[in-house]
Image: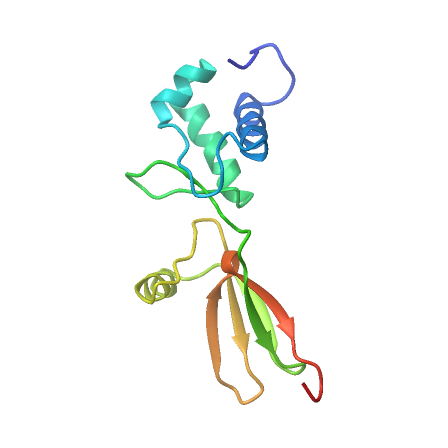
Length: 143
């Protein structure tokens, strides 16, 4: 239960507590959080407060959510190296709906609230990568 007399917005205090529980390993990467009604009962708050807290955690990249499913703790520990040349351009931006669908169909889903990495290679071609899964590395001359 969250003390309603404490400082700060109620949803923020719920989000902080959930984040702490994730960091302490109570909810490890890949695990599901309890359902919204269960969280509301645990914290003695309304569902709107829980939804706001989950939106906060999703925005921080700590959890992923999908309509009709329970929130899941994001596993960002295993990153794939994305090698680019020194003259390639990498930008981070929100994906379009079409890009999100295409990447999901290719088995590279973009988590809600996460950007894509748009790589534009020196030859003018480009590709998109879900940011939560990749670490950008720059190739050095001669390697």
